[in-house]
Image (cartoon, rainbow, N blue to C red):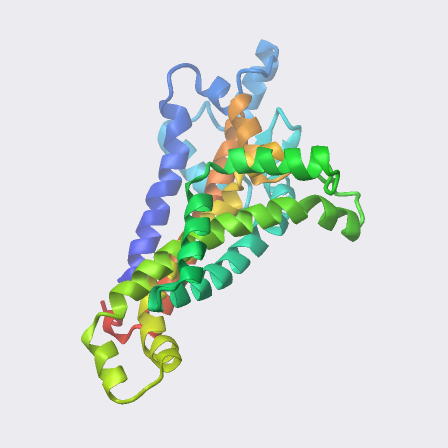
Length: 308
């Protein structure tokens, strides 16, 4: 049943991906090529035939699905490149930039949040204040402030993003600050969610029963409460996959990173709908896949959700 739900969701989303440019006011050709592309009338008609825009809408829809199954996401006349290689090239840099913060933030935020929720102390209150401050701060503001301090004044990090021709050491030097910032944002969110979840779980009857059996605090927390309290974090990590592949837009803009976020921003500015459609398709696939994995993990960690 869950698989059918995801298949239907994917079908509806990809169908909307087909329908939106064609439902917009104006000429469909202009919407798909972008308003900055200037072509002669003969070339426009030739491209219209190549893209199948002279066909009835039903046949266009069938051809759209055939192209997706053949991994043909169209051609970008702004970037002068097929969409799929362009998206894949940008995706690897976004993965390099955003995947480590998701992992670090999940581990750090979950562990510290669980400990802070289980037992309040002056140190846990200080941790909560710090993470709450980071969580409440706009990402672009903290990125600009960090770049101003560590890049402009202290010259510890470069002021501009990395390129594909750099050495591994050079790439690490360029991404270390944005990775730290994104890790802090991810950890702060996971910390707040995990802390609240542990506070709720520690008041349940099974936690009192475990304490009555004579178990130590760490045994109660990590052997009993942790598996139930971590369930909301799994959902957040699944949603983070969409964050990875859409890119940390503001972070990439501030640090001039050549990732998916910058690609989507450029495509929006130039009305490059083939790139937007291709990026949206890739993001959709990743988010749906991540949520399917999250459902499986839910069933493993919590037997009560099996068979639903």
